[in-house]
Length: 423
Image 1 (tube, rainbow, N blue to C red):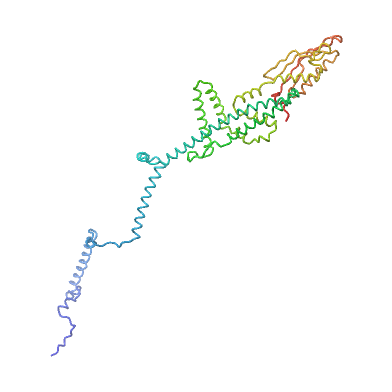
Image 2 (cartoon, rainbow, N blue to C red; image 1 turned 135 degrees about the horizontal axis):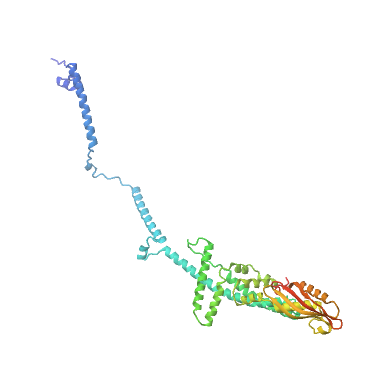
């Protein structure tokens, strides 16, 4: 007999398994059903709360044994970058140590202990060597320059003397001819000394230094000037300790040399002068200008000469102006034909005032006229000014002649005896 039961029909046990838990008590009354639902919800909430607390309180354990034997895939690029980073780091550390040790004093103990080169010390030693060599060079060429300037003053003094004779109003023609010839002869010697002095003083005093402590050219110049002066002064003190005459003379020459250091006015005058283009008057002025800027024996002598009054020129000028009024002056004809005769001269140094006393004799009555002509002639001179008569008296007769006392004063013009130079 054939089985008509469907093959897919569940058995009673299977039906129990397929029931919804919420429907298990579906046959009970509604009150029991409601209570069972509420109880189920509470259980779910309680379960979730418990799992959450466990999740926050305990970290899940990882089984590390699973990672054993797991290695990352090898990369050539990653290896290269690692090596490059290590090299750069090593170079950075080495560079920091090197430059710090060379430029600062931080690692001086290390560099000194292992006797390592120190760029800062090497730089300082190099700068000191440059300063020492340049100072020695400046020292010897300034000594030579001083010697040439001494020659310039020596030959220049001869030139000045003869130039003043050549342009003197009272010198004879023979004296002027000799003076002109002497000037021509000595001019070449002056030129040689001048050019040698220019050669020694023209080069710069300074030498370039790699020194951040000397920021400007002016500071560098001051540095080398002080170095040179210090060296010269040390040599002066050393020579001054000696008793022999030569050492004293060398000390004096070094003292004169020291006055040349840093004298830009002198160096500028020498460098900017075209000697061959100078006239005799311009050379005369140049010699005097240089002598005012240097210190040596001849410049001192020249300074004394320029300050003194050349009484021979003063007396010659007085006689020359008197002859213009009295043609027989100083020819011993005073008693026979009269004229002018001086008895005394007096000079007030502070006021540069010359006082002259004497007498005038005339065999007519023109004594006052002659005195007035004499005063006018003195005021016409380029050496005197302000000639004035102090007193006047007259006595005598036509037979014996009329005598008048003579007393007048002359103001000597400043540097009059050296200013009688034609341009």
